[in-house]
Structure formats: structure tokens, C-alpha cells
Image 1 (spheres, rainbow, N blue to C red):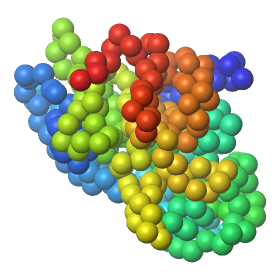
Image 2 (image 1 turned 180 degrees about the horizontal axis):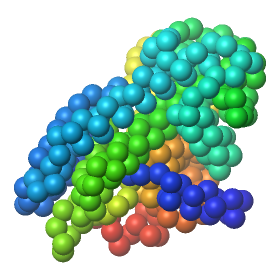
Image 3 (image 1 turned 60 degrees about the vertical axis):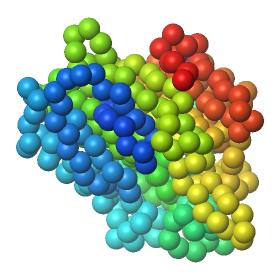
Length: 331
């Protein structure tokens, strides 16, 4: 499978944009300890999370910021599962019918590839389980099918093969939105910026000639503390964790991260941080390695050129990929 993985990540790094980091904010998965430079920050909301954009004062462009935010908000409207009128939900409600749309097709195509790369751990057809536990509106039955191979792509669009199957792009769409927003900034001529979408981020360029951006990774058990710092430049970072979204269901406190095989919540990885050339890849790999067992998750990370990972397990141990050990500082 390594040749396939190499080809995929090589393609992704050339075609997708990135994201970035900014200042500490207690509710976010990431916090940055920014250098002492003049930054202008703009905030918005999309993909169910606060969006933070930081630009150098010397490069600040209000129209470019508006374009970046508008790009992400448009993708949110197309791919959200929280609006029955979205393009994604139109596909989910019409099994066998081709639903057109370039954004839908782009994300669905990546979702199928990540499903194969992770041996099904990253499965966007997890919608029935998300509904069953109340993380997404709607109802589900025991006969509903979770299998990413039920999603088909053609020139006509994307469709689900059968009833009882539905896609939730929550583990990949935010990263895609960040990438497209960064592409919009690049088209506007910006060379340095930070985009943070609630823990999915891309660091464009470097704020000072002698240093890259410094990212703080939130401690999974202490909301206002950092567990590690990481320096990044023209790279994407994404964190997935069992602490981010939780619900009480039947007297049980559960995570939003689901095992596609069992349809049940997982808890063994409490924080998964991935670094890669683009945010969609980091987003998808953070989700996949949160679901996979230790050995499989670590093997996946080590097999992907350009990808690095930092995993914290529920038993208090952690894993740092080889390429990240000289860049990550545990606090």
C-alpha cells in the first residue's frame, strides 16, 4: 500500500492549501505563543467552530480576509449535516440519485481514499452512529449501514448506493474548508497568515525571517494548559480528541469519536495531533488514528511521507513520530 500512500500525499501536497495558528484561547484545541510581531486578527464562525485569521500588519487586506471567511462559510453551507437543505444532506436523502457539486465530489473523493488508507477507520458514513448518540440531528435504526464503500463518485456527482447509509463529513470537511480559505488568501497575494478553525489550522509562511510559527497543543485534561509546543511553516496541523465533544447518553459520558465497525464511541486515544502538507489530510488522519488501535495508528503515520503525529493515550502514555521528535517540545 505504500506506493498508493506516497502518490496520494504527493498529490495532496500540491493541490491543497493549508492553515495556521494564532493566540491562545481557552476553548480551542490549539493555542499559539506568537512571536513579538505586529499581527492583525479577524474572527468569524463556520463549520460549527470559531475561525481565527491572523495576518501581518504590513500585509493586512480586509477584502482578502472577507474572501477567506466567505469561502469557508460557503463550504459549510454545502457540506453540513445540520441543515437538511445542504447539498450533502440532499445526497443522503436520495439513495441511488447522483448529486452534483464540485465541493461535494472533492471531499467525497478524498474520503474514499482516506477510508482505504486507514482500512476503514476513517469512515464518513458514520452518520447513523452520530445520530443514534445525538451528536447529529435525525434518527437511525439498527439496520443502517456504516460502510464508506457505499458512496460512489462519477462525473455526474456523488451518491449513496442504498438506503440506511449516510455521510457525515465532520472528520474531513473542516480541513478542506481551511485549505480552500488559505488558497483564497494566496490568490490575494498574501505570503504569511495563520488560519485556525477550532483546532484545524495552517501556518502560511513565517512571521519573522529567523523563526517559524510556534503552535501550542492544548492539554486534553486541562482546558487552559498546553501539553506541548510545535514549530510549523507552510504546514497544516489538526487535533482530534475525546475531550472536544461529549454527551451524556443513558447515564454514560461519551465521546463523539465513533468506531465504524462497532458503531460505538472510542476512548483509548484522548488526543491525536497530525502534521502534514494540507489541513484536510491532517484532519482525516487525526480522526483515523483516534479510532485505530495503537499499533495500526502508529504504523499508518510512519508509512505516510510528509505526515507526522503526536498521540496521547488514555493510560497516560504517548507516541511521537520519528520526524516530529526534534520539533515537538513536551511541557
